Length: 324
Image (cartoon, rainbow, N blue to C red; front, side):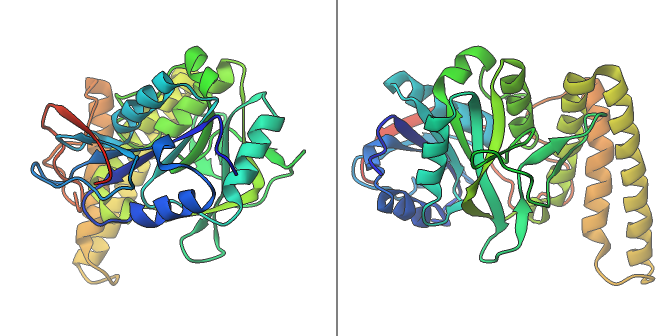
């Protein structure tokens, strides 16, 4: 495919080089490097820039901005250059062969869709991870685990996972970009909700497949904290006070269950380390508290189970262009 009218933002983190395979797949599909922008969230203050391709721009933050603010940097830069469609990818996403033209063709044939995504499979398998997302009446979100009915190659859903999103550029004018208060998690559902309320549809292209590896187990404390706090904010935006009460009650119940699991592991009634369940319990309780305290942005550094989450609080942004 030519890639005409399409620009790409790839959000990277750390120095693992996971994005290189993704860049290779994009160039194999005919995307020129000068249409790809890497936004790099460094895991340490002096981390080197990620490798790139000649002509591919790299924007390096001086700290880990999280998903929402990092993606917004790339979105603003690419929109300023002009495009019809913007493909947003995290460095661990893997488009399977033919997925990109399927997505682009579907978007061009169906201008009523503001956001499209592929069917997501667990990395390296054919096990479904997400057929898009659904929002329940109380504002609770979850991934669809069964293939929905498609019309014209697209199955309607409420939101798509932020790891792989194809967004119509004009929709940002009417709905805005990611809510940076969220920092990470639930910002994809929130953006899709605002896109829907602005008059656009959201769907998955059933002929497109991509791999995704959920990362919650790498950082159980922040994962639980952000899903709880941001999930409450999303539920309130979606369903008002009724949604907030329902989702808050569910979060507190889940936290109590995690405390029981922690105790069972600590007393060897159940196998496994109690540390992970304790991190989830603490993260959930603190997420509830911080929603009501209106504390936004990154998770607190004091959380247990931070895992690979580092370097979240330095102030500035540096930009470079070139082949890395």
